[in-house]
Image 1 (cartoon, rainbow over the protein chains, first blue to last red):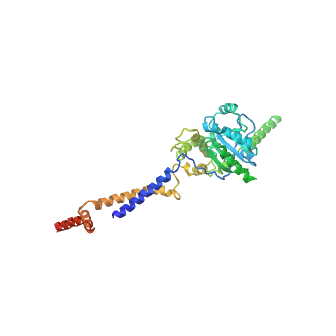
Image 2: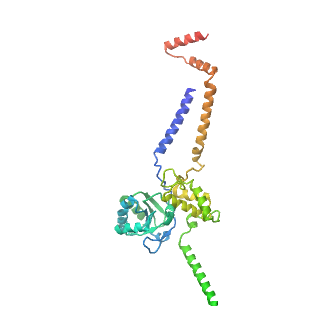
Image 3: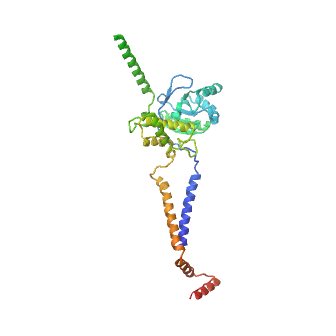
Length: 174
Length: 178
């Protein structure tokens, strides 16, 4: 009897410890990325500052980097020069910013101080962000020439991550 | 009169072609989510109420354990707006759940679906309660009363200790019981 109780008790404790270990090993605030290799959701949105709208269809044919950002987000400001340098270096890749939860005027003021070599589109209501499974800013999506999502980087994009991903996409498409 | 009629037809034709051109250019919901199952659009006021109800079961992507309907965050409001768009376009609750699961994984659901390994989550509490009830009942029926005392004594007697002092004590106890 005692041995049986000990065995059952130990099994319960072991199961509980395994469950807790699995749970504590995971970041609860981390949103899983399930759009890997999925076709990107179509969009067609107005540019910040006017001009022709930008659509996913128009981006297809060349790899694209879509960056969700806002002026109230500090990591977005940190990664801004990385994206600018990337857009300057990789002319065959289309870089597009998506303004997330922010006023267009605030974005324009920011871009006057720190100009951008690529366009930003407006996402009123944040529908595109939901379509892309965005869970905060900054988030950067890398698309191949067919419009498939190759990778997502949540948080400030590093130069190394940008170079590595873009080179991989360009390497595959060439 | 004839000229007015022609003008009216021209205006109608222009409006129709402009709308058609816009509809062709901007991706509609069917392009994003697929065809709606119901096909009947919901009234905006009803979509707002129904959307809030459905949003209660979906996790806010930027909050800790809050639903989309309970969070005042920008992301939650955008998601709630998307739910209302889908309801007004005739999508079902199951399709809306699928839309979020396709983008955020099952993480988006506050209550995991009762399927596959998720059954463990649903059944484990019931199993634990049943096991607990069994253990308590067993200890109540066997743990109190004279029979259990005897059985404990018998069990302890059955175990022969190797210590000579304990053997002596046991022998004295057996003698007393006689």
